[in-house]
Amino acid sequence: MAGTGPQDLYDLMNELLDASVLVLGTDVPSRAFVTVANPVLEIGQGDCGCDQLTVHATTINEATTLPFGLGAGTRQRQDFRVNLIGLAVTITRCVPTLDNNGNPPSVASSDAAAQQASQDIWTLWNELWNMARDNELFTVCEEVYFDGATPVVAQGGCAGWRLSLRVQLEGYE
Image 1 (cartoon, rainbow, N blue to C red):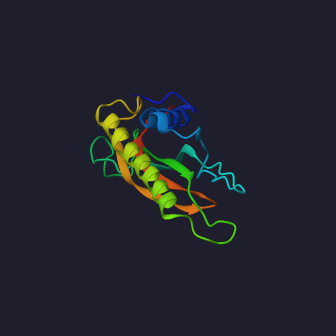
Image 2 (cartoon, rainbow, N blue to C red; image 1 turned 45 degrees about the vertical axis):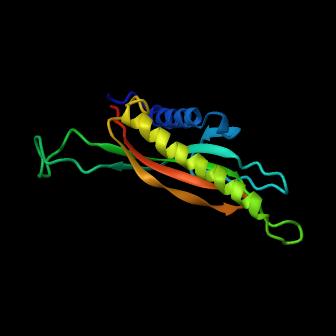
Image 3 (cartoon, rainbow, N blue to C red; image 1 turned 180 degrees about the horizontal axis):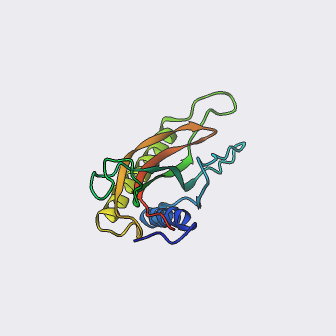
């Protein structure tokens, strides 16, 4: 499907956000939105506001194209390209920190935070992949690549995971 205009990239990110909200169901954080770049992890004094789900574009690249068609392998003008858009789904939750006396959090509270974070990423990883496999994830993309998930290092009482994808998105004229 050919792109339609400047709104295509935002629409792509919003579609991924909607799918992420859907698969998380009742476990979705109260804050869910598309952001310009890496999400800001809100740091509060004893009031964690970092439970959030965000989507942003990480890269826009031209993919290597196969050597076919007029001009392939030459320096002639080519009238095609494959756009690959890097996307990131970031989910963070409040995690226990040192108390006012510098004591570490309890093992039970640390374990509960790890359990929630593990459930978050495993749900996103599997359910979004299932949707992509069944052609239910993106309405405008031909190719979807899951590039992995990496932890978001704990800071200011927030930690979580970032899921990275690459998707093909047609340009527009």
